Image (tube, rainbow, N blue to C red; front, side, top):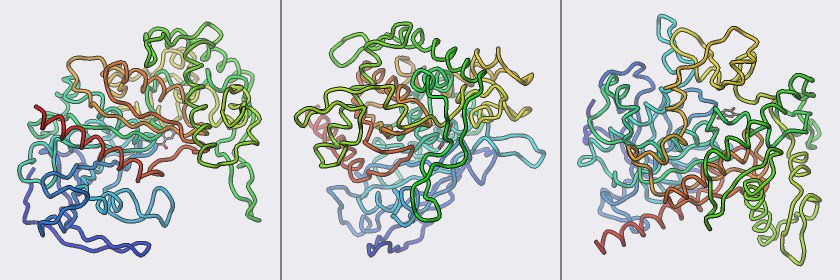
Length: 474
Ligand code: DHB
């Protein structure tokens, strides 16, 4: 493991009529004993003008924040990334291009995923490999911080969906000893893995409670649409064919799972910003549901103020330019269900998450008591320590973790991949723990990320300014 500051190329890239010049340090293997050296490596990119003593947005070679996006989706391997087009809009410059343009140093690690095997056919990227690799990459940045460009005390992770979940884990579990043994086995650098801030788009997280949260939200909607709207041949929107109706057994599972959710929510001791308890009664109603509704209402209000036409949303109550209420069931019916019950820990053990929780020997495992009990295969339960290491909720209030102070969580208003309750619980819990959390459910946004990079960067700049001021006062 090394970093040679003299090994780089200077490159130029033009997209959409805009040009960036950057210095690229590629293929930096971030552990001493890689299991999969193709993936346990990272690219670092730097605005080239920093080497000509120029500044961008007030940042210089040594003061620029380090933007650290991952490319993980579906808990599959995250590829080594480059400035280019992609993710949000096929021809739109990606977050790396935009971040360089904005003056950030970008550290983009590849990360192992659930489908990878070694030459003997042994799985090498099952949980917790994804979070271990991300942490190892952060340790590398801290370890070589004196030689690296950028301010490594300002690392901001970013990801979408499974990648958003990884970003949340990075934010929650900095330096926690749970991960230390596995990091040591890989020969990760002897440095910390804490980060400054976490940016999380629609995190598919808190997996062992995601099934119950999903049914709390979607129970009663028994039709499912694996994909939402697609264009038909004439360019008209049409529902995908991958749809159907849940079986009677799945409908029963939905009710069973929904019934488990209030006890879980109530066990968390959640409180809103004013200190009011956020709880649910046995029917799934109560102040927690009102909180989730308030997030959607705020989204609708913002859309209204930005001039969007939301009059067709008959589930909203709008009076005198103010969004005052909603019918949650109607809202859910409109956005539609994507997954059958149970949404994550499939009884047939064939979901992406079952595969995530597999191990060297078996491709898939269960990770909830409910699905283990009702399994249709003779599947095993995943190692409880591994399940624990994949859930940021376990680390937020743990004094052995250095939880990031700053969080930005975005979970689209019409996302159906996981319940809005999942991100809401994460946001509320972080807030109660003293973190600064910017949490919103942007209007009419489906399961996606990187769609508001200007706002994301403005948020990052704001935090860096606050921190600088705090440092000056001290
Ligand atoms: C992703 C989406 C899912 O619906 C899921 O269950 C896991 C991961 C993703 O897009 O990363």
